[in-house]
Image 1 (spheres, rainbow, N blue to C red):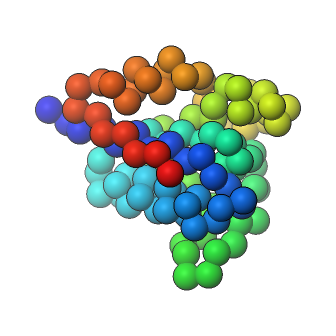
Image 2: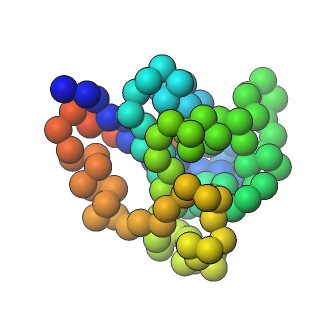
Image 3: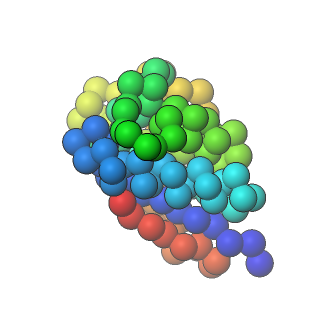
Length: 120
């Protein structure tokens, strides 16, 4: 049975180390061939917008835009419905390949057989 890693990023520029940890773990797993689903919630929802990840800076961390690209290329990226709505982000605003979905979809992914969920 294939394993799935569901990573929920709850922080953005407000907590850069926690944000970078989520993106680093998700992209490392994706690059290793793991089925990855990265959820952007809270302040990390901003990174669903084109160009936003490129503005993120953290010393000694891989560029967030590159980490996001790895996950977009090999896995799934989802922006939280409520988090996006609170920021006036709609489906036409996000990077191609990013979907907007809610808690029911997150719970379904996290509870699927063989899934491991991590929240940062």
